[in-house]
Image (cartoon, protein in one colour):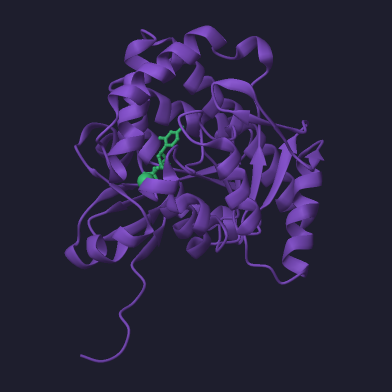
Length: 305
Ligand code: PSU
Ligand code: MN
């Protein structure tokens, strides 16, 4: 066999129309739906996330792989598939296998950013980015979310990274990978359920226009790299730190012996169970908060061009 096959990429009519008209589009990931949130709240959340964008005149582009096709923008029936079927979690390295087999799966931040870039979507909202796991000096467990972000021109809005990870090590890796990190109205790096991680950031941005200006400058510099916008929850909305610390300690202890891509979903699920669902409500508010910020950035970006 010779020659390359066509790129199996499909943008929904909504997304195509918005991009062609220069209107704002925000990418959303699907692993948060399939593996990050429990059923049946996950489907409700997936629909709510899209509605937050539509209410702001922004076109949602939820990303997944369905029947071998990289999808940018899903129908409601496709959202239901992601939420209700037992589909696999896909990082970038899994894409060739699933495409070759005509399979389906939910995309992580890494795979979602990669596919968003292929589709020309520049802004992406998630809950929490993956990062360097605790004990990574022995396990080598570092999410491909970091290395992929160094490689794609996508601005990711995230509430920092979860405290299940080694946050200082994650920030060190982002520095090494030359990923630009800015705080949304803050110089403190958040830790997902908590407003702060105690880690400082060098740069803070006040609004969407400031982020769009950084994106434009990054492009002008010829850098095809991602930008991380760290968006903390307001302190009154964060999880009670005592509840957080106890749940985290228990989940981490129980995760010993797990490896590979099971680690993150296991920890997330256990923390929801241990906190009796309180962490879930905070998790949903985090995602919504990030989606609102991404809408503002995408709108400013569309106006900027
Ligand atoms: N963090 C969250 N919720 C999630 C995840 C991370 O707050 O659902 C998911 C994302 O899809 C992220 C992935 O890209 O976990 C990272 O997994 P890993 O550590 O296996 O790379
Ligand atoms: Mn991992």
